[in-house]
Image (tube, helix red, strand yellow):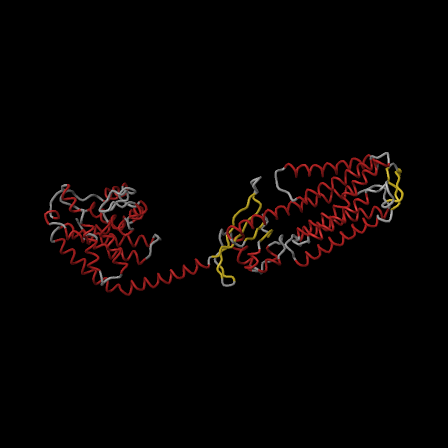
Length: 568
């Protein structure tokens, strides 16, 4: 191998390392200071070797050699500290300080070369087969540098083995690569001296090592970013988290999730699912979220608490690329208990309704019959109206329940039972107004508008003491507010939107529908098409828009009901 070829190889190595240093500085990402220092030290070592192979004077060669010793003294220290950080092994600040001082003293001694005989007794520049070679006789303090290298080599090897055995929170693959790369650099250095090689291959070993370290540093930076994200979310939400990479391997987790899944502490952060497929981590998190493709896992119980696992994608803020999936555990114990309590309460309520049904049905029949008879004696159209609207409400309530509308069965039952009472207040309207044939005057209409409020009072008196309190409240609201409009232009109180009780909004649709398809003294009965068109056009003005949609879906049943009545 010629000197020119060696120079070209060194230049290539320098450009690779120097280019990476520049990219680290200008790529806009946050890098660990240790990583940048390693890159600078390796670049420094390669530059030192380049100076040596281009030297023609001993002074120039010694300058290059001093630069080589800068990387030789501090690179092992940095690699030791980085490995400790990767393996989550705490190194005392005092120990770090002592190691730094020892490295500085070793560097200081090494820089005496060519000046004093502490490090090199004799030193000169010669050429062997065209290669410049620094001929030296080692002094007594050169042993310090060898002790430093051997000590760091033992420490790195021991830490690597310890991390692998104890399964510290580090990638097993990265630990092996890190140790192997350090071994390549060390074997190259000692091999050259053992075999007395004229060509120095350390820059090549540095470059290979640099490329391998770069891979590890990128993954570790990602791990640090993931841990930062996890810790930030943990502080905000107090939630256990674990991070998976794009290959669905565990890459990071916080301490909270270890309390729920202690086995996760024994899993390497780059382990595939096959490594832990017998654990609860796989069964309760990995399988439902990754294999089954669910966004949330089914509820599961761990140590007396109920959890649901959920996942969200994590993206690189700079590139916008997905870098992994964050899985969190939501403690739903309180919600589960509340749901159980609500379900138990609902069961009790429905049983109470069922147990009282026979009693309620008895008074319901008598009320309907009595009301229809009393009111019909004064207003022939209103009595039939009560019976028909009761049936309309029944059909509507059954459809709402079948469609999954978010109300209880008990509530809809109450509305159905309350329907016959909605016009009870007309008992308090003067005969001359109630019996009038034709449209009301403004004064007469004001009198008629009092019937909802009067009806509410009567309903409370009629049902008080003989019906469930929930039924009483629903019946009062139906009587009081069934003439209110969604846009606030109804009566008696001008309520609007959801201010109007739901039971009254249901009753309003049944009330108006019957009025439309029934004959009155002032109008003929509208066809079904006309009636449903009017109701559809009144959603958002007269009626609750959502209820209108459900009501129109009842059309087949309602037409069948009214066809059975005959002309009304």
